[in-house]
Length: 92
Image 1: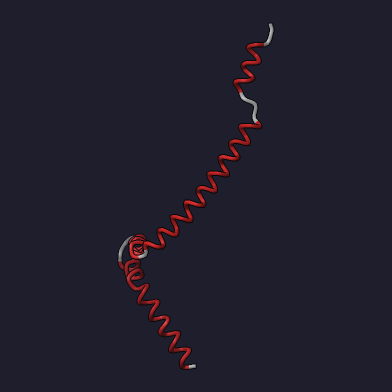
Image 2: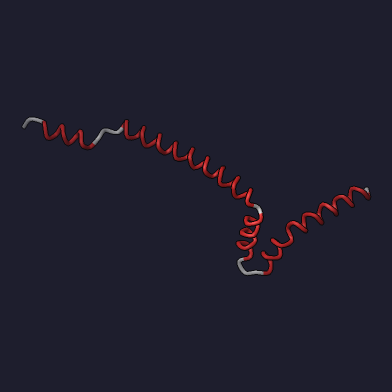
């Protein structure tokens, strides 16, 4: 029991040491959440790279879906110019 409690306290201590600057900024400064987030991202550039990669892949997939939808709609919708050309060519 004592070792589990000690291990839990050491884990909590380590977390507080890592989170300390961010929590302090968030509590003390007005707009501290934004400053804490910017500090975290500045100190952890790998997080930014991973997020940017996921965002790029997601946006590419979404854009491909939109392009396919627009192409499908364009193919299934009659063109206004074809209708006008037929009306102009119609006798009478």
